[in-house]
Length: 141
Image 1 (cartoon, helix red, strand yellow):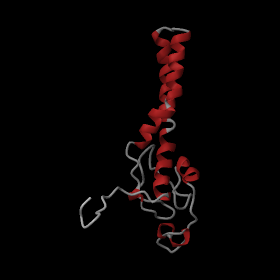
Image 2 (cartoon, rainbow, N blue to C red; image 1 turned 120 degrees about the vertical axis):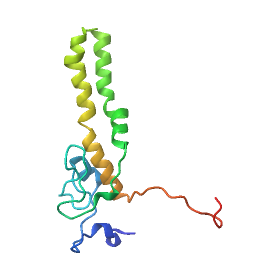
Image 3 (cartoon, rainbow, N blue to C red; image 1 turned 45 degrees about the horizontal axis):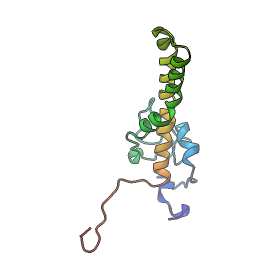
Image 4 (cartoon, rainbow, N blue to C red; image 1 turned 180 degrees about the vertical axis):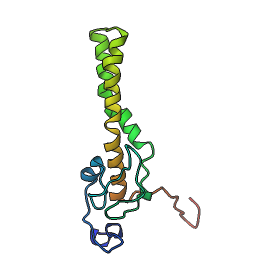
C-alpha cells in the first residue's frame, strides 16, 4: 500500500498527514502521524490518543523493548565507568554511592523515554501487528 492509500495517515476530519520518520518523531515523544502531538502523558505513560490529530495509540505496545535496549546498550557505558573506577582507583564505598550510582541511574533512565517513543513510532511507521499463525494446505502447517 502506498503512502497515498495508507488510511492511517488520514485523521477523522479527512486531513492527510505526511509519512514521518520514526527517528524524527519517536525520540522527541511526538505523535508518529502528525509529529506535533505528544505520545506520553507522564514520563513513560502512553496517552490514549494524540491531542492534535486524534490518532488512537491502542496499537502502541513496546512491551519490554525499551528496557531491553537500555540494558543492552545504554547502561554499558555506566557499568564500564564503575568498573574502571574500581580497577584504577579502588575507592571507598561512599564514592560508589556519590559517583557510581548516579552515573548508572542516569545512563539507564535518560534513554528510556526516547527509546520507548522510537519503538512506538516504528510500530506505527512499519504497521507492526501481533503475529498470527497462517494456515497452509487446508489447515495443516
